[in-house]
Image 1: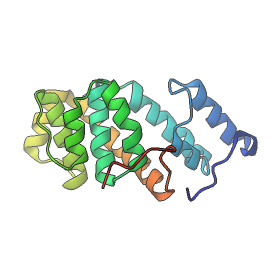
Image 2: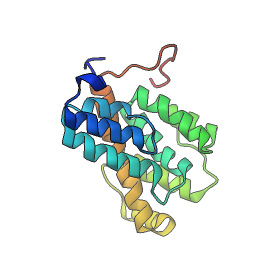
Image 3: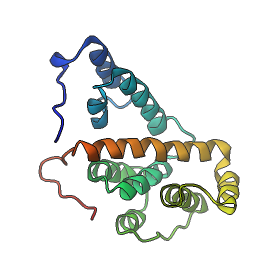
Image 4: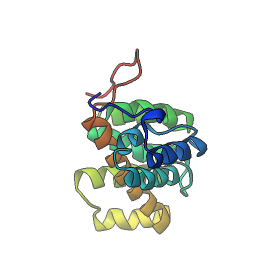
Length: 181
């Protein structure tokens, strides 16, 4: 870990307010990257609130959200993000074979066309830096404008999360082994 994370007793009033808000939220605890973002309290406040919305209050199911997050974690080879969200994806009902394929940089086999388009959108955003007209049209048909905006938001937000975790070299919990190569 490259950054000394503040403890609640070391925090300024602004930092402590954001920290306490995260504990009182649906998360119940501060997300690890927020602890780094506390160096800029206003950024931490806004980023954490956006993250809470994207995690819990979009029109997407948990499995659909986690699919976009795992594609993002894999793109950035964000070990901590992968570790945290693989469990959430499994708990949310995402097929383990899809998770393994993403981990191994293989295109998963999808039975659900909505899941496939979420994967295609997330992958295209990261690799092609945008969406082709046919993919955009298919995504708006299957996800609606709101769903597409939320998938794009998930990819963008979790890119920031992955960059933060990677830049500050957040460690995996003791005993955990990195899965991404």
